[in-house]
Length: 249
Image (tube, rainbow, N blue to C red; front, side, top):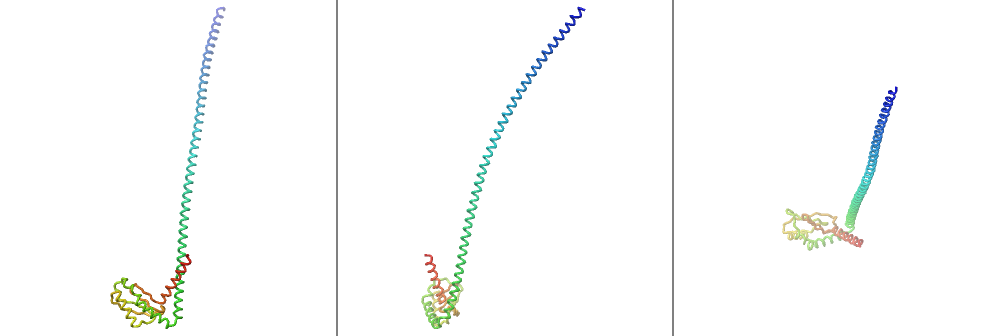
């Protein structure tokens, strides 16, 4: 029996020793594992800090990019607004110029219309006045004036004929008179014109009481108006010009 007890004790000792060994190994492994976990935790924390730092940097950079883009957008917006304003002003300027041109054209058109109306009224007034004078003047007075103006025209009114080139083929002188020409006057007119033109013309006579007195000589496109009606027209035109000149001053 005494031999059994030491064997049991030995076994217990061995068992306890194994337990201690296992415990030491286990403790060592636990410490190693804990240390590894701590290292992992530190590494994770470090990476998390780095990630947070990078996130902060990325956020900051993004904000800088956004701020820069916003500034550039504002600058471009301001430039676009400026260009639009310049284009607007240019269009307004062009529109004003066109409006001024239209107004000027309208004024010119109005003045031209007024001038045409005044001219037509003046011609109608002169025609009416000539008609009244035609009926108001005695025939004897008109005949005296007629003869006088014919003589003046023959003596002084034909001088410019020699300076005019008559169209080739014109062989006729047309004379419009208020009264029939005397044979002597007809001969004088024909001789004077032929001498000045160096040609041999025929004379065609036409009566027109509306000219009241005097004659109108037509040679091709050349017209010499020595009628009382034309004298009235010339005097009226001269008076109108004088009145307009006085009004302008």
